[in-house]
Image (cartoon, rainbow, N blue to C red):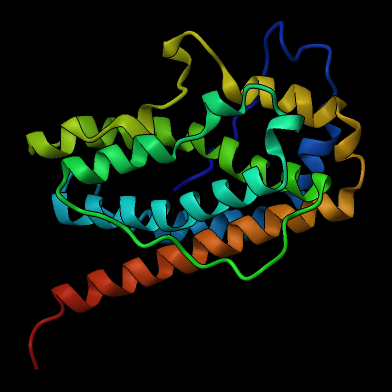
Amino acid sequence: MQIEETPTTGPATSSVKLNRRNSLRGATDHLHRDLDRIAAGFNLADATHYRRFLQANAATLIAIEQLLETAGVDQLLPDWHERSRRAAILTDLQSLQSDVQPLALRRTAPTPPEVFGILYVLEGSRLGARVQLDQVLASADENVRNASSYLSHGQPGEGSNLWRSFLEHLETHEAADDQTQTVSGAVYAFTMFIRSFSQAANDLRLRTAPAA
């Protein structure tokens, strides 16, 4: 997972000041960089690496999406059903003859401001997914190329821009007013993904380490 935050322009956001987005970005930049550094170690054109990459994403994504639904995310984002990606990532894992055990999240349902912070991480990851998708589609392995539902989900080429519309909600919804709690939600999501990716990276290192 990688969040590649690029300048957002266009009719949907040209009149929206990105103050809340910028606050979240500044408060979580160190975590963003840590996650990017770990994720960059996966060779997405290789079936073994890509499988573990998907498993690391899925372990956290599935658990967090379920947590958000417990908190009533569809009341904050009416198009949540279009944004949920756990079905897509499970399809990819099944295509690669793999499965995943979602993380056990030992916490209560997040508050509405925390939900927006968590969503900032999930929705922002679509931007980095564009680059990762190119790597997958360039793979010499047909099985890897065919398992791209997760990375291609909600990309602008499908006729929508979910990241841009999310920013509109983030900047205008009263539930995102509490900056302390939105940052708390984003930090929580980043931390869970970092934990999952760190474990996956360690597993790959152990697997490829030469025998003593």
